[in-house]
Amino acid sequence: MRLGVGGQSSLLMALLLLLTCLHLGMSLERISYAPQLSSATLAGRLTQSTFTLERPRGQFSHLNIADFDAIWLVLAHSNATQSFTAPQRVEDTPVPANLPQRGYYITLRANRALYPGGQPGNELRVLRVANNTRCSLITRGCHHPLPGPGPYRVKFLVVRDRGPMAETDWSSETCLQQAKALQAAPGPQSAGTMVIVAILSVLLAVVLTTLLTLLIYTWYDTCGSTSISGPGELACMKRYNTHHMFSPSAEVGS
Image (cartoon, rainbow, N blue to C red; front, side, top):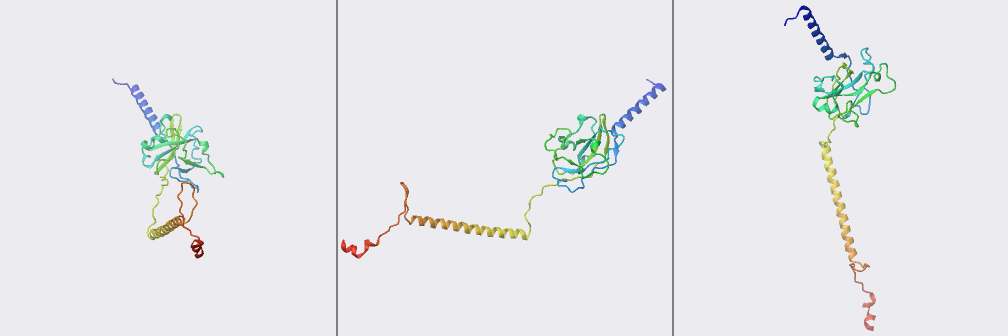
């Protein structure tokens, strides 16, 4: 079946429109900003399961971004950033339970009103990531404590009803703290510890020997003296002779 000139032009226009739509659906506006760790000296800035970011102040004040657009934080293993695909539907949003398989999930939904521009006031404006212990791993937007030390990378993703529309750059790698196993002190400290342990052992043996000797002496001393006992009790008696029984006058009189 051969198409006329008008039909070919219409088909070409339809193909161009389709390609344009696909291109617009796949490409996201790039926001020249990379999230970074908080520079403030905070307790818990980095822990074994959480970390703290600077708030992206004024980074979403573009005309194309509306107040009602959702701003998500994408958290991914460092080696999974290349495979990240922005979800086109809300129900496809990856949750923390997807981290082991996909290597990433989306959390901390906000809007640009929470990230205003200008100089910050006295209030410390930071984002604590993965510090919610009360949410479920299958709940959308949950930022449950992270399961391992990482490294992790994050970026912000702006999503509208019809799908994602803008994103920031990925942050640099963040490694969480790791628990350190207790190790024996090397060299002279180890030898000194052994000497202290030996001295304490000898002192303990002396104390135990003294207590045992005292108990034995007390037992023999108790059995060698008169004791008043009740019915059915064993009594240890010591023979005691009065002096007048063996005196000469007593023998003569008898």
